[in-house]
Image (cartoon, rainbow, N blue to C red; front, side, top):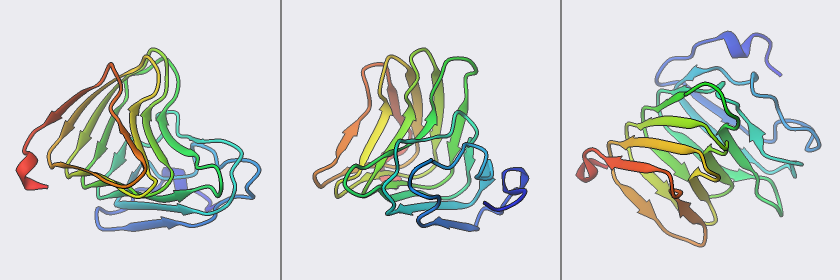
Length: 170
């Protein structure tokens, strides 16, 4: 762990690259990443026991969010919101890229998540992007376009609203 990391703010052009964090048995907690950072890349090749629950602790990534791999044989998820309560707004200033592992913006049962993506959404390889996995709701504004390829999945969910603001720009 990096002492004081959850209370720090990083610049818009900063790069946080996380490779093989943790022991593979217990998952890193939701307070181990700063809430305000530039680019975040996860390339976790350790076999994790479950998904990484952010619980609304990460709400502002100023640059790109990239998940390359999350686990070994069983791919796990980076989950932004997981339970009822507050209505979080998540802002990702750049692109959302997923070529391995899973990104879940809302896995709660009654949570409404407001999501603003300043770039494009790109799913490739075995990566999966799930806006909601249960009865939660995601209201997403995506400035760029959408690219889906590979063997993974793009799943907006039945209660999601995806607004492509300027799809020709991504």
